[in-house]
Image (cartoon, rainbow, N blue to C red; front, side, top):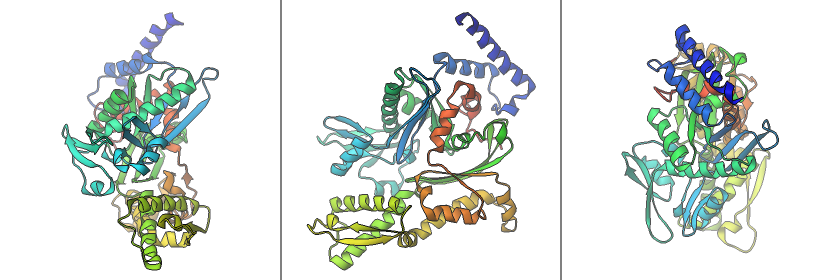
Amino acid sequence: MAATRPLLYLGVLLLFLAMAASGAAAFGLPRGVSPAHCANEFLQYHGISQHEKTAIHLGNTKSCIAGYGGRLDPYTAYQFCIPSWVAFTDNGTLVGEAAMSHAAVSPGTAVSGFKRLLGIRQMVKRDAELVPYQFTEQLGRCGIQMETEEGQTMNFLPERVAGILIAELKKMAEARLGREIESALVTVPGHLNDAQRSWVRREAARLHGGLGVAKVVDEQVAAAAAYRLHEKRGDDKVVLVFHLGGRTSHATKFRFKDGTGHLLEERHDAYLGGDDFTGRVVDYFVELIKEKHHRDIRGDEAALRKLRADCETAKKLLSDREGILMNIGSVLGEGADVYEELTRAKFEELNHDLMERAMEIVETVVMGGAPTSVAQSRKDAIDEVILVGGSVRIPMVGQLLEDYFDGRGLIRDEDAVIRGAALLSRPESARYVDECYNGGVSGPLWLAK
């Protein structure tokens, strides 16, 4: 078998050269990229591990690793997810559930919601108002500054936090597989530019995450790939992927041609997600407690953290219930139980404008600047609508989208991104994600329309 491998690699090289001679643009090859370079990248990716089938998705709320393989059955799929939290303590670094629990006690030493900070050059004022740590400039980019429990000041880039999560996920998967993971496919938001993608690959995945090689693929393409729309059955289809996560939202409309996604329209909002819905409920109960129980808890950080946790739980339960009783006595620190009802109708009333804002993102992408007179034809031109992110489970969100698309069936799949990325991480799918095709050399995947 080893003797035939050089012949296989030579065949791959000749295939790439033949593609260039016949028109590389049809395969999504960026202009100015050498076919020989593409072949070398291809061989590098596969030369490290012919059996690597690993994908990683970093989310604002949770991060996941998935793939195929194992000691006994290389075709068995696996998936592990952890909360996207990292905490720095006197006893070391905590990750996932442990970090999130530590944040309840010492919020200033924990980091979450870092994803929207990746690669940005300036701190956004709203970010500073949402987190318990400070921002600083590092290497011309927005960095994080916090004090440890010992009073020492730490300065680091958000890519380090991403890398710590990647390293933890990698360790979990390696325990499952019984071998070391050398390379992985990492999903990134479609709006990231070349530099931001490079920082995710080189700093987050390789320097801090411990990977030898990391490729990137747009989250939206991964979501579509979960339903194999990148393959022949999806050729020439127009796909709309709408993501409504814990802290961010975005919508992307694109068309697949020969396995390559071509951008048609994209919009994103870095400050619209499930945490904002929860925040509205928190504000409601703060005012209700002040009015009915004559106590203002806005200055009580412990009470506010408890209330936010209870409101987050209530929000999720309301996806399956019409109402829920919340024990605010525990928030007030009273011995007796004090209950207040939160109905789904009240939740929807509190968040109606935010949900409308989410719909505006969708409508902007669907219309693409066209006049309203052609709205129906623009909707009809979309072949598939895929909804991803935990917040798409909110009933009103689904109903608004169904109404907008005239009752057509929508695909709701919270885990579509990581599952699709796992499919794309297989060696046979390399041409869909190799840097020569996804723009790691000369631009994002959807640069050509």
